Image 1 (cartoon, rainbow, N blue to C red):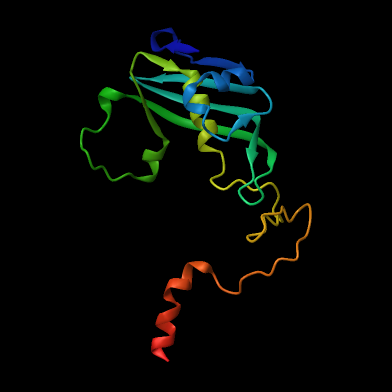
Image 2 (tube, rainbow, N blue to C red):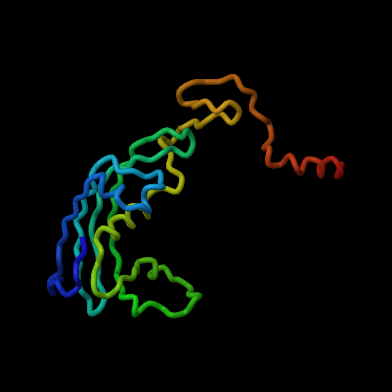
Length: 178
């Protein structure tokens, strides 16, 4: 869904956005990610013109299917996002290569100055709110590092190493110091 800036009235524009699962998969960039929609995306977005800038507020709701970073099992992740940011035309973007960002700069995005792509905004907000390390439940036991069994479903009798194998290369230094 694309909205032209010239079509936004002075009092603002309310946009309702609802997309099914196939919307998510039709974008090639999203197909390689381990994030899938379990329910349709529903969003209510308000657009207000402030001179050449656009103030964007709204809510997005959906349920994602993610894979647990500990046990690798799929699980459902309810997502409720509230957004509030400003769209600046790219012509107003800083021209410096290295720019030090302030806290308020994190609430700014850029657009071409003519059209606003609602699909892109919604997808971007979903990605920004997916946890970096999704965990199916706080007490997830994960996989056994020796045999690979899911410890949430079964137990194993593997002997756990007492040290981290990452420090094996440093073991000889301890012997020299003694």
